[in-house]
Length: 99
Image 1 (cartoon, one colour):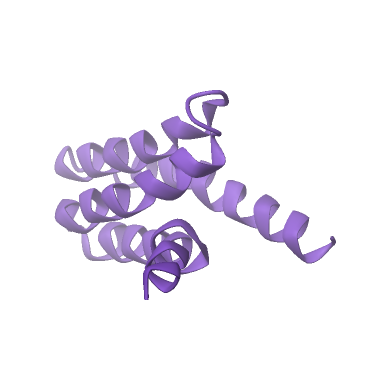
Image 2 (image 1 turned 90 degrees about the vertical axis):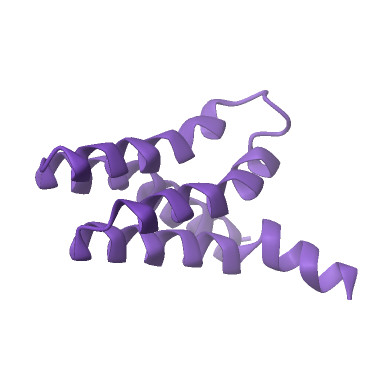
């Protein structure tokens, strides 16, 4: 049971859920969904960052910034702030699939 929870919190389900929540938050103009996406992405970005050793830990801040941009009616900026986490997930998927 605990192994399954660890995989859900730190693995691909968290990455996919975070990205889907972020896209839904910007599309529906709901900052609460973007904040939830940022909270969901914190554990796996911490895990990938190797405990504060790489800058991937700042990726949830882009989602929080996107929530702020939505509250300020800056929709293009909100979409652009989601790009780093999507690019990171795509690169990580490529690395995993080509091993």
